Every structure is written in structure tokens, then in C-alpha cells.
Length: 165
Image (cartoon, rainbow, N blue to C red; front, side, top):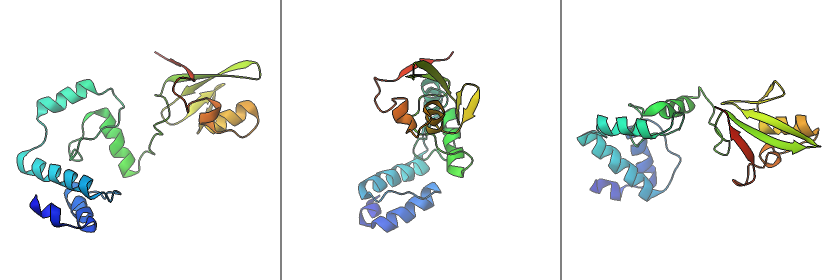
């Protein structure tokens, strides 16, 4: 552990790659030291107990992307499996500003209420699938819009949403 204090940022990043098996983008020395110290301790003494991992699975809602430090080999919960697929390039990362899949967004425009169902990878409006909210906003309004602005997703208190059971 004392060796970590003497390493440069580049050396810490190399050590991170060795211990975790993937590169990091951060150049924050303190953060890298903490992550590396955690991983070294985990490898030496073991990670979380099976009981702790089971409790995490109970508490974390399905679909939540979570990976505990050093959990690359043993993923935790359904969310961690999704995150692993993102890292392997099998899935593109989901924008955190989006509400959960199944949420219905309502927006009044030109005197009509439009309902858009948020999917895991797309959006459904009037039976048509769209890859982005901006495409839906353009289809509704006929002009280019930022989808988050059109559906008022920039402020947590303004959008009208309802969860679909």
C-alpha cells in the first residue's frame, strides 16, 4: 500500500489496468490510490461476503446499473449484467436523464395530448418506434426539437409522467 503513494498518475493507471482488467479514464491520484488499495485488499482478503451480495441484490431494483469495486469477475444483480454488456459493447449506455422503461411521457402540443412510452432502447408514439426523443418531438411538432426540452425532462418537477404497471 505504501508503494501506491510513490507512483505517478501514469503508473497508477497502469496498475489499475493490471488489477481491474480494464482501463480507467480518471487521472485523479487520490481516487486511483483508493480504488487500487480496495482491489489489493479484496484480492488479499476476499471481497464482500455472499450474505452481503445477496442483501445488495434484494435492495437494488432490477435494471439498476451497479458494479461494486472489483466486481468485474462476479457481477451483482441484473443491473450489473447490463453494465457488463455496455462495457463489452453489446449495449449502448442508457442516458441517465431518461425515466425508467415503461414510463409514459405526456406532452400537450397544438391542442392534443401526446403520449410516448419509454422503452429500454427506443420510444413508442402512435404505434411507431423511434430511436430518440428528438425524433418523436420532430414527428409531433414538425420542427427540430431537443427531445429532453420538448418533453420537459430537464427539470424534475415539470414533466408529467405515469408509471405503467
